[in-house]
Image (cartoon, rainbow, N blue to C red; front, top):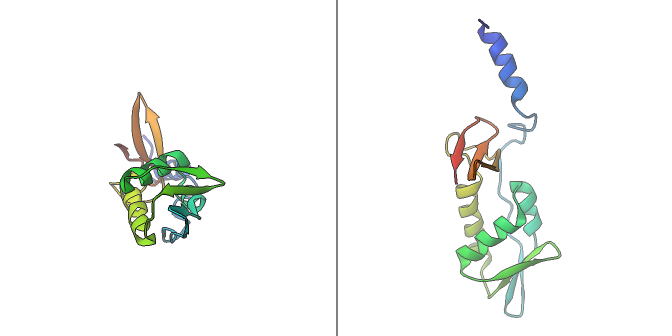
Length: 132
């Protein structure tokens, strides 16, 4: 039977290096501009990279939350209609609560995985798996 220190060492080896080293997680500020009757989320790719999520998934969520259509062009999200920056920021915060933070330990170090046909939120910090 293995003792505590051996088990702890084994567990720590399985934790990715980047987990917990990023400091406090902060959601980037939304940067938008108007183009006629369209609103363009200029720093859309910043969110995609920071959240480590598929751009189509994030884009679809924002569009559904705002009740509009849109598309991704040159790394920016082009939304049909005029929306205030704060309104879009709120929708992105809704996304983080639903698809980014672990419901068990509240860590942002998660990934979306599909196992046996079920979409799961897998936490890299605590190992929790929660259905989405």
